[in-house]
Image (cartoon, rainbow, N blue to C red; front, side):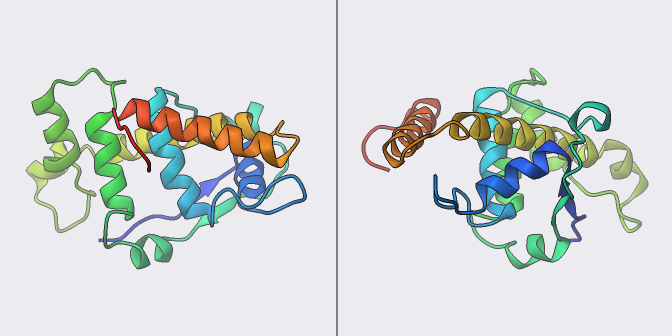
Length: 180
């Protein structure tokens, strides 16, 4: 399977650069752009928050931050793979108001990249491009939420409190109790 590069552009690029760089106010929040992309897609989905890059309002002159296709390929095994996280987000998202069977079809059965070798009947049923756009909108929405929560942190104690709040939001969203 091949993956396209993904780019955070404009203000979203500035956000991801800030959250993947340590400074005197906070350590790196995310190890790299890939980690931020996956985590933020989950966070955006759990919060029902989507954003879409709009060049007329979001372009702040920041150079794009790119996740190369090789990164997706190198991290394609395990639970922390793009494919696994993508399926989870697609199965639990609520924006399209799909019933359970439709979610299964959309996330598993018809989430097929349109490639030349794909039979014509499956190309017509493919939800891959639609699903990719949705995943990317959740990633940008989650990124904005995380950035907004962390940008005004003024002390290490505030950072810890904010990160604990985010953790608790995850716990609540997935009905998890106990230590993570």
